[in-house]
Length: 224
Image 1 (cartoon, rainbow, N blue to C red):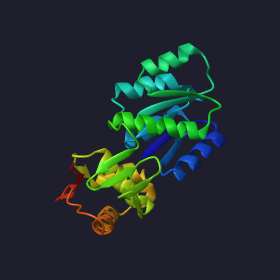
Image 2 (cartoon, rainbow, N blue to C red):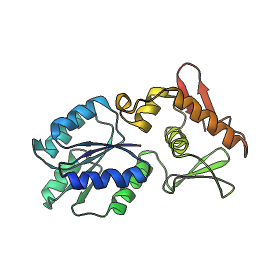
Image 3 (cartoon, rainbow, N blue to C red):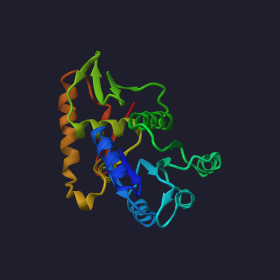
């Protein structure tokens, strides 16, 4: 999933980016409110990690502006401000959670997983799809309790389709959410088709995968 890190402290922004990349997230950093606005206008992020004390504006004002423009991303406020009023204002403006600095990176990850479960109606880390179980936190696909070996991107493609089950995901939607900023990545849209082909081959060794559908001329869908 894609994450916009809005943080002007370079060391913290770098630490967040490295940690979340290691957990399978595609991260983009904005160090000012202006950069954040530009990124939000161009990319449909899944998460926004928002510092309130930005050099060119207040993070709460940026949040209010983004929500007025129907920002769909989950927002977690990360700030050194400890006032209860700031926390209340952030949550009332539409933030999904609030972490005071300094914070634990594993705790941040746990909160992101919790938000994902709430947003997609998952009551436990395992999501059933056909004869398989998708463990979103451990990033594993299981068949009969045994792990099915997938590459990082194969898991990313499958998990995104499962989270949006019964909805057609276009190739553009998949690429934006998994690879992030396409012009900078040099992405080839045929990669999606190749990953789907590999998924069908690997999963088909264990069970039927008719639930992984091709919607001709548009994209793909997991039907459950």
